[in-house]
Length: 36
Length: 525
Image 1 (spheres, rainbow over the protein chains, first blue to last red):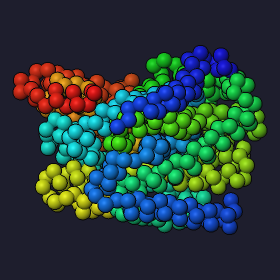
Image 2: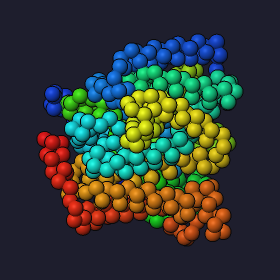
Image 3: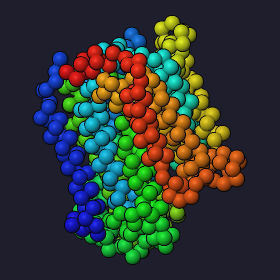
Image 4: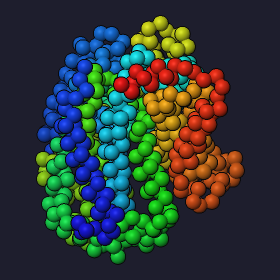
């Protein structure tokens, strides 16, 4: 998968990318929440 | 590199940094400004400053080099850095740290724990741990920056070290956390651009994402015998379960640094510098992108450099770098990147060093002036003492850089992250999430965490105990127990033990403090 020898490495590569994307989505969704 | 380009570039860079530090100085009037930026720092600046403090030169160059040896399994650390170090740290821990610090009216990490449990001992003890053990971590970052300036600018190493230390001391003394955070944010933008370009060019050089990974997978029969004997199974597989390499990867690099980040005082205190939860939510967006392009990119570029070196010179990256993993990334940049990038990367590494050192010095200074001296009633406002703390911290880091053996300095980061996690994390979590936590539980946990982890580093974990030499001097051997104890990071047993002690003592403690209820209600809103 993704050219990786082991599936666990392919998964962690994806997790790393997706966690960064997740941070962007979360930050955008919460952009105006929790104000003063 | 062309000095006629590099030197003017560095002068412009230092000029901009000094301008930002001066702006921070002009905006700093109260002690709140000096310690927590008046609790009104822009969330983008906060997130960039947090990231730049998190990432030092050793993280970019050292992690990339480690990746060229260990392979892509290190991406577990990058994932934890983003998931725990950014999302959990800001959205879950950070929001509560901010509210609790506001409610207790505290501006430092040791004071937050001390006041939450109504214990001057905790404040002074935590401040002392920072003040005693952090200079070694500061000096490794300082040495990394100094060595790098020595190579890139052909400066004498002693001059480079002093110039770096003097610049940082000036920023921190004059402008406090505002000068630190503004200069951090500028440095972080340079770091972000540099690493983004580096990652894209690397994937392009090895034929794209899937083809690059496949080429790396196809190299698994080229693993050096010494690494294969330790459990290495190729650069796109994890090491053999339970092998020495597996323990090193999982316990030190992934767990130690991955979990340790949550209890880093210089990072946790960043959450006190913004005005509301909204700022912390916004910081998640910036922080996630930043850390992905730092540790994530370093752990992708390092392993993939093997593909490039194998295709171009029929050797592994570590061989091309003459066996020194710290030289893999500089060597790879010289081979694969365009000429102008070398200048950008020079500023990237300079930013990484300055941003981390300035934050560590600010933390040490506030631990000295605010947490230790003011709590003990020495020095009225803490401000003068904090500025004296800057000078003491910088001086200690420089002295340690010269007197500690290279091997000890190299282990300072793992040591610092390990003792912080074991000593602070259970108490921090208790302070933020558990109203049943008591003063006695917190004190017992902090003392247990620091004592057990320091014992482990001195007598059990061979990569530190071997270079410290205390175990050898007292017991005639580098480590007291056999494998796997020699390869298990002390954090692995000190942190659970510290957590168990915290819960057990709190539950059994008859003199329950009621203050926890009030605080929990205030920060859980």
